[in-house]
Image (cartoon, rainbow, N blue to C red; front, side, top):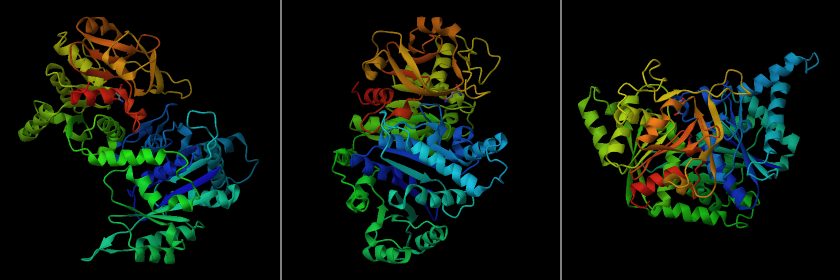
Length: 543
Ligand code: GLN
């Protein structure tokens, strides 16, 4: 097993996750089986309880793990499926050690950060690295370990110590340390400054880890003298100083690292497969797209694109497949509501909705903006605008249908109005067998087709069922299904009990689809998720 450990310095937001996934692409291009692990040094057990406001989207895995969005990058870049254990958190490590202590496993010893926490971290890393991740039974050849946070943070210190020890446990020749840093540009001539990187490397070396490779985020390619200076002061070879400068799209990043000789440093034959060629085609194809397609995203965190990262990626994958440049028009759902106080904001929101070639209402929790989302679903239904509702987006469209087509004026979801009459959506928890008290329906579940033929089934292609990932507690009210279907909104996909509605499709509409699951978690570049592809095809007249 070869390990690539990626740490970061100076500040967050340097694209450490993209850098780490891109290195994974290079390993894969050499024919290796690659997996990855992300370390998040916070005390939360997982990302499930964290606000998208603060932390970006909660990414959901097949096994129901609610994890950091960086795991989404790994799944998309490396085309692998990870599990909850691929996200290490301080909460998980400490719980494990404390439980072991209570069982008496430490035989009377004083339990300490070193060696017990650092030992538990290393055991975890080594064991998860050996789990197959690419759908085969084969143990991976290489594992990318990304350390979240910035070197020097108090909370990441035990992990740095664990990784320092790890190089002796698995053999120094089997670990490559990559440090991602920033090279800012100052002054009228645009001088590239090396001091922040010098400092962070000094700090890392003080903790016992000497980076083999430096990846420097900057606006323009590193000048030769910058590279040499960094090499001299940071104790790395000049050819091991990589530049990740601004590029038109992220598919260029693996190519950019390869062009600077990273494969030679890692002793990889990156032409062993045609993977990099595929990335090259994708990167340049995306650059050439000029004809735009406007998709309105009606959501709650519209000023924070990380909150919908996988949805955005899925739209991009689908837009690429229909040869269009994606433009997302962000609409704050509450701005559509008739009592929204600022009339110019309201007009602007409605104008954007009307101009859009397609409308997407993504998942969400809580009642803010619900009425606005219902209005967006109504507009799309009555104006033949292609619509995709995901999770909450399916629920609001069902409420809208019950109110305006079936005439149940006060219909709602019991999430927002517990006592409403004729609820369209009700609490249907799934009682977790592994997590006491867990009511969320989480992770991969099968959806069975209820009809021989329909638009969404054709988009998914062969097979009697589809497996997609879930994260919700509420569902379409089974008592309403008959009336809703009689009026033309067909539940064409259900779970294996026939109780839970997974997919609807509206008869006589070009594309009006709702899915109770989150298809965005399984979309891949070059293999767009079918509901998204359908939306983009319908929006561009290609369905
Ligand atoms: N709040 C809704 C539920 O729990 C929708 C969840 C979601 O969109 N992920 O069912």
